[in-house]
Length: 149
Image (cartoon, rainbow, N blue to C red):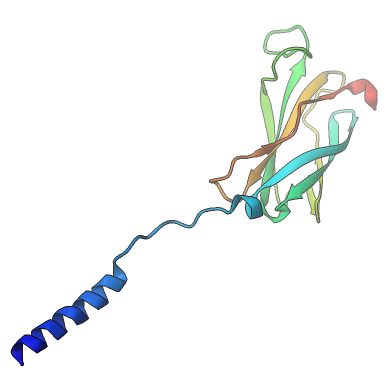
């Protein structure tokens, strides 16, 4: 009887502790469900301001903020050129809830005014995901020409 009771206690403890032990993993993002891409539909520049309309393809609800990266185009030091590799020299962060951020369904409208009036700029938009384990989605590089007003 004593042996049976000892085995029963051992098995009970093993089952109880065995349930608490095991492989535990952090939850991971499901890339198909949590990823998005950005595509510029239209852009316009008026003076120092830029208005962009983008399509957010995929998980638009995961778009936390955008970073509009830009560089001035010219011949001076620290300025880029049209044929050169894009090196963003400055950026504007726009978050959900900010004045320049309007997301409706899969359409994102951004408004910002960081430019000098008569200067040409190159820019791209990087969308930041709410899930930090997923990379940002970026657009191609575009030119904001002051003469296109």
